[in-house]
Length: 285
Length: 294
Image 1 (tube, rainbow over the protein chains, first blue to last red):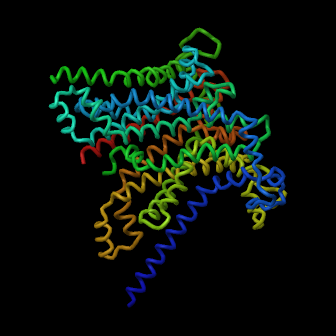
Image 2: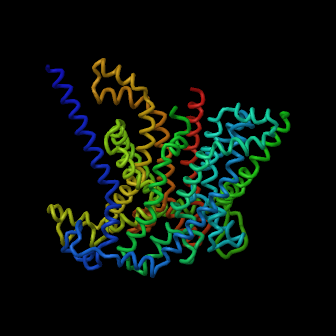
Image 3: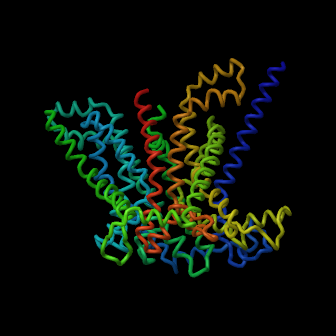
């Protein structure tokens, strides 16, 4: 009898503990996004009246901040810039990373393992260590204030991680599949391109999503290399160039943050488990 | 295919990626050291080797010394918050429950959102006049409405704000990594512990945490890198202010080397990131090596 009550009590405590933790985490982590959403639709008078309860609409909601954002700022341009850079960087990343990962997974043997780890470690070299010399490289190539500078430099952080992720994918595919294809008369290269790449599409898609996410998040290089407002990406354009002088257009700013965040959040969530597999460096089986 | 041909093919497939990394990571990395040992400014064409002169002048600057302290406090505090929070959250999310998918999506948002945009959201939350936090605090009579806390204007509070915002960004990442470690613990070990009468805390500290050591290592190593080398939160929230009270090494390197055009001093400051990076890389290698052996 007492053990049953104990167990019940224990279960109740566990549940209460879980919901306390989950509840406070959701409030802490989610609140800024709720705040962006409500700010984006509030009338200016409502936002800047200190007497108003800030959690509710004291005046009817409005679309004026969105209209300002899309009509009178470069926001749309920045979205397009980010997308263009993202596509180009992902393309470069795939061209460099797929063959390298395959070579490391299948052809290079023991030193392939080591080279793979060495490439992964370059992912740890941060932009804040490289930006000063990188600015020189960009200047020498005449790419200052051009989106091409970003296309050139961003693969420095997408390639290492992508090689690492793809190496894991290729290793998980049984060798027999290619060997069978080679017995059928394909060369190793053909077997790789025609057999292995098609069955690794989900791995390649993971790399595409990951690369694209990293491009939208990057801030330091874009801030360093790009001067003019028209050439910005979303992550620098919104926080730096949407502020005029000392005036913050909070309604439009928050709308911009939310619009730029939601699509990547959805896609990233779908591929989460694969990214984790990459980050855990084999520490989880 | 012969051994030789296979090696040639491996080389050909690897060459583009390796050459790219050498040219755009290796070369700039070497240049960072070269700059830090020379006399280079924007506009000047020559390079004069000055040995450790830049390091000497950087080390004698009070702003730099303060920035080292800020970087250490920033990194250590964020790791502490994120590890404790991430562990609690991972434990809470371990079992399936209704709505876990939605909760996971929400919880992940700060990590996926471009950090500069998340930070600008926080800048609005911490605004000097319209801060919603202050509105709440005034409502519950914790602060005087005529003298509300200036979250980004007071040196101590600004540091606290920067730490909280970066923890906000990193907590989701730590949580999902730790959750992966937690779910990899075989359930029968935990059941056996329960049968033996071990309670929650005892199981947690004597079984779960020791078994999660490798994965906790990974979370800390990435966390340290992502925090110690980050300047985005500081740049967007405070620009290093007020009075350089939130200036960290990467932001100081940016203000000195990029905006201040003193490339040599900027490079010297960022070179101070290298020891920490080297330690992390070495630890990471050990984690990877152990994972291979097992």
